[in-house]
Length: 415
Image 1: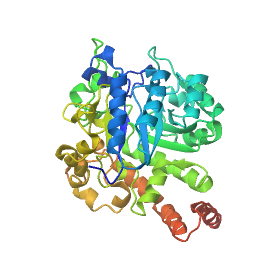
Image 2: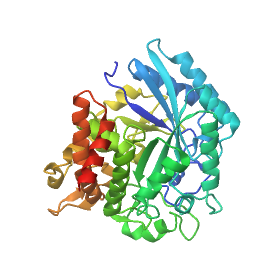
Image 3: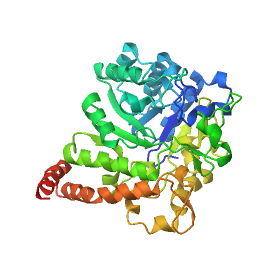
Image 4: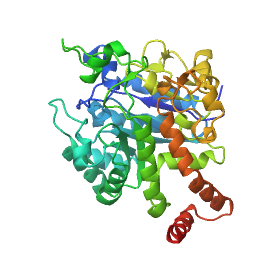
């Protein structure tokens, strides 16, 4: 059986293991699901993973995605073998590509030469200027990591590695949208940006432990689950999230359309044409699986927890897992569980309720299941609609969306 459409798999070759100790990181606690000392993907599991994914994917480009934890902790030799296996096991009509999400602190010239030679797409995690980044992105000793991350960025640029920036938006940087964006653009020279809201959901009874970095008084880590309706003080609020995106959008629309690419803006523009590249704002989800170091398959990277395991790549074909009743229900529920407030919302076309993991608030009608970030999404999508409509019209006319900047400038002058 061949799937008509591609899917994605986020693979965690080191499980939850990481050399940093970012205080908002939900995934560090996933080590509790497995033997903490044995979270390293074996070569046998690596081969099974790549063979399974290539067999399950349609012809065309196939992206192998490496994440963590911190994936570089698995060592360079592991990824050399991954590239070799990809080349060996691919069908003639497939083109294997690789991407990696990293904190960048372990990169050196050898790593970057390899990443460049094998055309890896690298996502670098950095939360803006030093004072904002170091608020939560710390090492095991509690010290800031900004200097080491920027060094990693410079090495990636030195070797011309194709690199995106992934920035979380949290309580420390949420009020600095324009500043963060300008720093990426002007100081780093970054041209591809992703902004991810930090929402640390927790049962009220566990909030005190969560505030201490999910570690209790006895030193034991609390397993993060998608449960509860409280959030930590590190979390971004809906209002902050919307204001952050609006600040970035206004700066981008005025100066950088066609030169800097921001995932949320690209996604919103594509949605105007009925195209959905980001699961968070697609009508349904369920085509982005996660695979742990031992081959266990989960419904989603955010749902690596009991109740969402789908099988194992040694015994279960990914294409069949994707069309299983369990995963089908998981993906459809993004649409079927929308609140009445969401269903009648004028910006539903762009939002589609956001990620299910954040749907633990109460709607204006008193209905459970509203997105915690709803205020922000509604504010941003409403604010950006006019500009997106203009860019969509330009595209339909065969013109460049960047022309919107001239229109914006003339409107500003008249006002």
